Image (cartoon, rainbow, N blue to C red; front, side):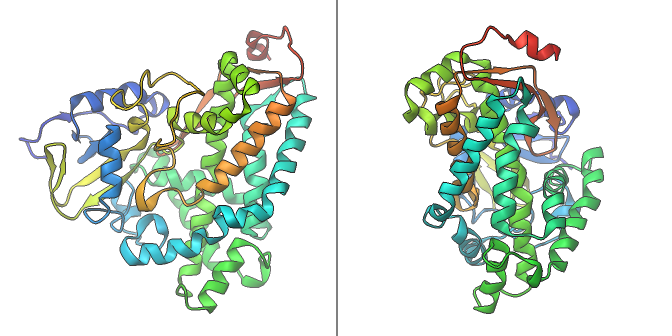
Length: 404
């Protein structure tokens, strides 16, 4: 039960449909109330200011992941040995194996292929009257590249996105979405346990996990859990690309700035991930009292660390609700921070930069229609929106797109 003397506190459900569809005013309310705020509806604390979020993510010896990172006891009690929910030396051991094929030095071998696929996609979309910004643009390259690099058999590739969405829904509360996601989460885990080495692409990341087990770098039983580490995050890059495309179409001046100075490409990607972080939050468990700028979170508390709120903190970013490709947002929290920073961030950056540079070469103007927000307990992004690439300046308007 939430202690009566705890202040400040807020009686809101961050996992309601309304809160998930438009969370930013609630995040601001949390930031304004204090450095750590009690969420009475969830029997948890929330940390939402930029500096405090970064500090909490670095305090991995006190705010631990090994008790689960979700907001429900059922999933947190599962205890899988994946990098998301391990700490200390075990986490470092698993992460070093997981990240090896995703480091920049390893990705150089596939960079040309990624860039070619990106250019081919953009060239195709320029020829279309319009397309879906998520299904046709944002989803295409990450699915093609990651499924190839992981090297799963056909069944795994077909279900990857469905399993990914379910995994993140299951990490929220056990609301309707969380309950519906749980069978899919366990289906994914059963699939991972049943993957046979002979069915994998020999040079793929999944096959390398079996090789790491042969060499004694991980336990054989860890192979299945670490396959989940490759499958589950596959939707986050898609959502980031969707945000990037929508913002560039919504603000033509920002796109014109990038075309005039392509060196802004990395900044534009960081800014899109800052403004609308694909992952809203993960929780941690306090194994000791933890101080947040003078407010003590007690030992045994569940702590929700709001990446997306920190990214819009007025204390760190000037005019934080504005998309600005000239902004230096390299320290954004869209990939997390600290020892649990997104393991696939280099892959995501390669895909996003390749697409954006292909667009610079081929696309004069971008048009977008109104987006449909997809409701997910942990992820924030669009389900769909109409878009168009024009090789030359066109009189077509967003009104035309929204009417299609």
